Length: 68
Image 1 (cartoon, rainbow, N blue to C red):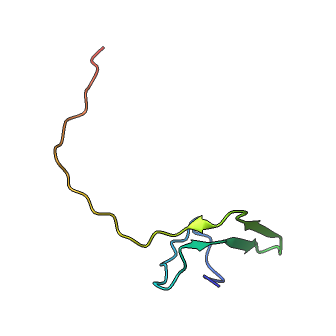
Image 2: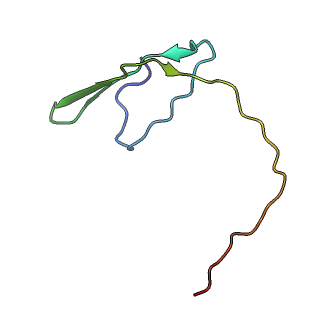
């Protein structure tokens, strides 16, 4: 289980555990205060990439403004 009894904040950021496999299936089950329940399940395994991307900013160019 990832989490339970969360407030309705419209999003949830899940801190991934370090021992998570490379591919996972996800199932989300939600229930409102009236007891209505919905379930969504991925039909394909989702790739989990725990590598933090590394990059270097080479240059910055101002956005072009079209004056009409």
